[in-house]
Amino acid sequence: MKIIGGPASQSLAQHVSRILKAQIINVEHKLFPDSESYFRIMGDIRDEDVTIIQTTSPPQDVRLIQLLLLVDGVKDLGARSITAVVPYLAYSRQDKRFMSGEVVSVISILKIIRAIGVDKLITVNVHSPKSLSDIMEIDDLSAISLLAEHMKEMGLVNAFSLAPDIGAIDIVRESASVLGGGFDWLEKVRDRVTGKITIKERAFDVKGKDAIVFDDMISTGGTTSSAVGILKKQGARRVYAACVHPLMVGNAKDRIKNSGAEEIIGTDTVPGPYAVVSVASIIAEALKQGGDQRY
Ligand code: R5P
Image (cartoon, rainbow, N blue to C red; front, side, top):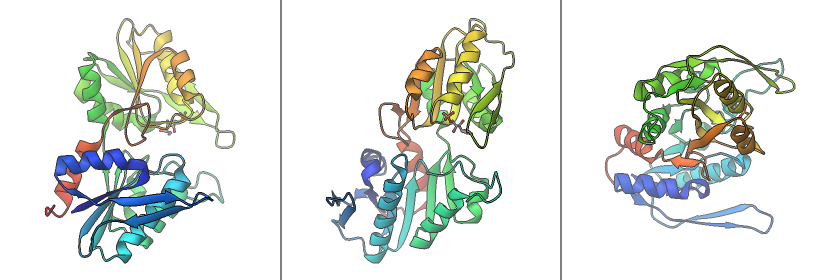
């Protein structure tokens, strides 16, 4: 297997290749004056099984196009198979028709990825993996145990895990199995037109205890900051905000910090200041299990 790191996931790709002792194929990437991407694959990939690692966090449209150009280029140069590792899959929240006439964006994206020649897709904690495997072969990995192990090392053993909505229930079940300390969830309703969220408060046994709000992603920080605020109001000692995909749009950091969180901890599915935990080990393991062992 040969690995190619897209412009958005260069360091993650290096990390995965070190773990697997797999060869990285260098890619020359330049931007034309009008910002279009130019790529040149700098190694021989004919008849090889090639893994392309490229996340699609913001700027998601740019990164998606870069992924598609790389896939098509690699295919055109004669690769035998192509696995795309897309740690954060853009558009994954629009995974159904919530209101009539809506485009189910994530399905459109998957159809494009499949049509361009990706044989297998690997994602990490995709928002709702269920309907996606009807479109193409997809292996959705979970980074929650990695995050929870990290928090354990920070001394948060027996911390309480809270899901800000029922959609994150599997996430907190998994984190609680590592941390102990129990788990629960809140009820969140999002106004489909304005995007405004309302969270219904419930009482938790957190007085004087440490707690962590776990979610798949933090975008504007509205969901996480509301959940952190509820835990603080109920007397939790220290509250942390953890997520797999720290998109951290706009003033998300200030909202979450102002609600009383000690720290915001995310993974390198979204490169940047909140990428505290690396998902390289689970990606390497999935590639080892699923693919060609000739590196
Ligand atoms: C939604 O269901 C997701 O799991 C997250 O809770 C949501 O995307 C977070 O968005 P925001 O940070 O804007 O509240």
